[in-house]
Amino acid sequence: MLKQDETVRLDADRLEALYLQLGESNAEDVVCRALEELAARLSHSERCHREGRLEDMRKSTRSLIAIADQIGMQLLARVAGDVTGCIDAGDHNALAATFARLLRIGERSLCEIWDLQELPL
Image (cartoon, rainbow, N blue to C red; front, side, top):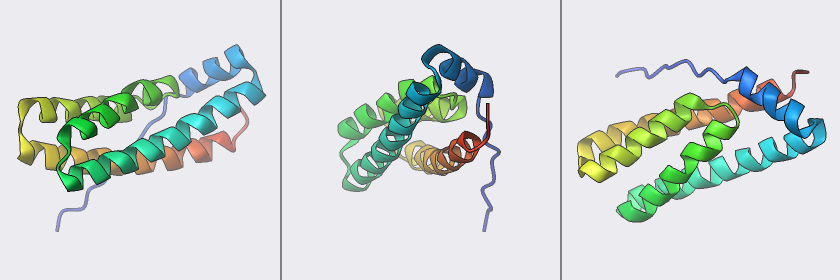
């Protein structure tokens, strides 16, 4: 069995800029809402994939890009774009593999940013 292990790196500079721009309290609110939204959209995308609702999956996955980018999750944003491309190309095999990668990276990114939030910036 293949072990999938990919390092997730957050853009700490992006997060720091967000905190400087909005202040600590407002930035924490934005990040927390973004994390909740990312988790909800990943879950919704997974449900749509299981049910074969690719247009809904595309919308949900596409919306991940801006949210992830806002809080420094460039890898998550890029892979969400790859998933959207697979849907657009109608490549169901590539979609299955790429979407599995998106879920793995999404989970790791959410954990990573949660851990990073506990550190002082």
